[in-house]
Amino acid sequence: MLLVIVEHDNGELVEAAKEALTFGRVLAEKMDDDLEAALIGSDDAGLVAAAGEFGADTVHTCTHDLLRDYGPDAHGAVIAQMIEELKPAAVLACGSDRGNEFMAQAAARLAVPFVANCVDVTPGESWSMTRVQWGGSLLEDLALDAEVPLLTCGLHAVAAEVGGAGDGDAESFDADLDDSVTITMVKDRVVLEAGVTLPTAPVVCGGGRGVGSADGFAPLEELAALLNGRVGCSRAVTNNGWRPHSDQVGQTGTRIAPEIYIASGISGAIQHWVGAMASKHILAINTDREANMVTKADWAVIGDLHEVIPAIIEEVKARRG
Ligand SMILES: Cc1cc2nc3c(=O)[nH]c(=O)nc-3n(C[C@H](O)[C@H](O)[C@H](O)COP(=O)(O)OP(=O)(O)OC[C@H]3O[C@@H](n4cnc5c(N)ncnc54)[C@H](O)[C@@H]3O)c2cc1C
Image (cartoon, rainbow, N blue to C red):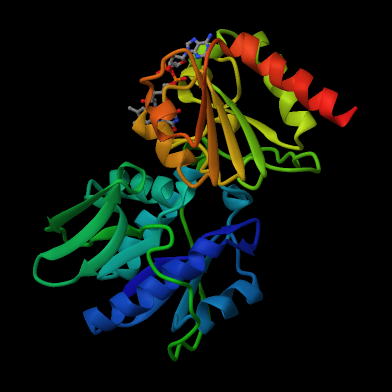
């Protein structure tokens, strides 16, 4: 049996979980085996039914006081116990941040290999697969020799599609958990203020190491507010503690796709670029005309951002009267 871990957030199915179920349905067919699903921290009838609609025969639900909200250790522990008791032939989840996190936890607990972000999987004596690396800039072929392959499928590796003849019968699974799995847990949730978010903002005013300090972002905040946009930043900035990680653009941050990305004092390293490359237009502001961001941008201003940004703000204000 192929076991697909169905990711949800507080009882709400995440979109990528539908992709994992679709990917799993195809993989189960290749394995000539059944598709079953696991719901951790919920036994919601709607979620069980959704897993059935995507082809899962049995949906193993696991609820527990320590699974009230998301925790990678607790999820990993439950998956490891499910593997030991249900003995699936393979386990799959979606390659979201959480999916990769709890599968890595499960793999570590069982001391078995885990392959993240697969886009194509061929089961067999020895499994072979292709996975995406480096934020989508590298496809890697590999062979996996494992008793139980633990995999995640890359985001958007398939389009989610209901199908299959799954009964979607719920079966409760008892997990043995103690406080040792509460090292990392969601304790509190803060609803973001209304308005544009970084992934959906039409304008992103990004700042890099060239901004020089946390206070140096004030003009970028002002420009973003004027243009109904959001401030983004590079990892050099979050590493320096100038901005929170939620503002980081890139491979280990947010992927943005604004109408225009104003990238100031950012060199445009590949890890930053993969998060910014979907921008419709890029304006780079940099003192170095050879900087990667400058060579890739639609427009560039070669100059000191501490002079250029205030000048843009003045111009926008002047034009608006
Ligand atoms: C596994 C891994 C994951 C990573 N993930 C990310 C990620 O998600 N996002 C990310 O951003 N990085 C990421 N990085 C780091 C990345 O490799 C770069 O180190 C980082 O993006 C550099 O940030 P930066 O462009 O701000 O700094 P720098 O590379 O130091 O560039 C600063 C730029 O500012 C310019 N400048 C300096 N002063 C001024 C001024 N006064 N006016 C105008 N321009 C000026 C310089 O000419 C230069 O081009 C990752 C690295 C690794 C290894």
